[in-house]
Image 1 (cartoon, rainbow, N blue to C red):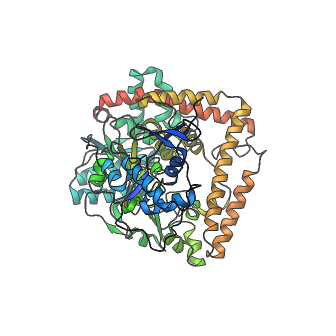
Image 2 (tube, rainbow, N blue to C red; image 1 turned 60 degrees about the vertical axis):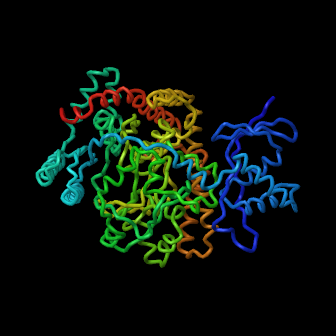
Image 3 (cartoon, one colour; image 1 turned 60 degrees about the horizontal axis):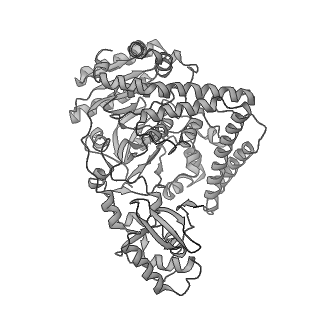
Length: 623
């Protein structure tokens, strides 16, 4: 029987042993990804993933290919194969001849060829821009600051954009105040504006009910606060769903009321594209909000146009434009991990960093996801460290544009010309879940994070470190994101709406699993969360021997708290939004309720989105 396997082995980092460094002008090569099937004890058939071409080779040559996954010079590959593959010691000349033959057979890809392949796709005709949507909820003071910066933007760039305020306020006085603020903004800028409050949302839902009566309950749960069984939870996803329906068939920009322009370019920002899928953002700390808001340099061009030039465009067009890829940027990267870099990949959303308040409830990421220079600032002295653990005044941004498959934060611009999925209308991490659902529905699309940041000023200084010290409590949307991620690549339909329908069936299947199995799935999810935290922190601890003792003490405490939670095998596997006194059987019931609610949304969303796309601008003008 034929045995096949994925050609994706990852080896530990190889250290160059030659006295002189690699030639900076030499071509970098990486072996092509593919699949192999055994033909005999010594030979195999290798199918190149990118071209589908078959090649017969010895198992020793296959081993050599597997060793040469990273972009390096031919000399480096020769030395690595000699040191790694058994039986090849002292045969450097023979190894070189084989590797040169692999280059000729196009099983080794040169850096210039990779870049040319990435640049080979056509540009797209960009869809129209519908509006700038603002999510707001009971924060008129924050909204006033955002509108003031948008007023400055309009006076400077004369863009005349359409602004839509989606007001999810509970207090009627806040809703009235925010409606008045929008009207004053319209009088000042002469821009077209639309207000979507409680009554307008209800009117929109009633329109959907007339054409899709079977979607009545799902539409109300997705779009109306009072109709959802967990209406007391944070409702940012509800406003996101409204924005996606009101922009169906077009592009949109999305802002929260605690954001503010201008976009600023960090001092460390460079040019071009960073192809590293593990590349992380850079973080800087400031003693005051005023200093954080003044960090970097304000960009001169229209910030919306900066994003819209990329949003909806092919990655090829972006690389041929301002986000070019250089040969040196590929050095050391594994070719098999660059699958997202495809010429025809559509940039479905664009993102940015932030300056001011942190965008995260916890500051756990400061201990394992921070660049070396930022880490030195983070723990520089005990006094500043105590302040920095709260992340009140920071800058967090990429240093170059980078492709991200599943972003964790709110997008700035989205291409909604092809169906974008809904998200859970309630609960934190709704944008992160929306990103996972988008990648599930549109696996060949990507997101592009730009090396700019937007202001983020929350209404008060939040005590984030208290969320960091104890064991992490994963949320409902964290579980759903993980569950959706497990479905990546399972379904093959080209239609995103069909994929959502399939997903709804899988969710309902899990919701009907035996109680014992649902409990175990929740426990396994929580174990993976806590084990992942422990692993990342201990790796960071092992590589930072010079860290100050107060940083080390906090890392140990966080590891111990998560280890205790990891080993609590008999505890109820609750998610953060569920009651503190819930038992294991109650967790199983709660999980079924969460799954059925989001499954209903996924099942009916395609029809709602299609109706909204057919209506186009008329939906906004009739509200």
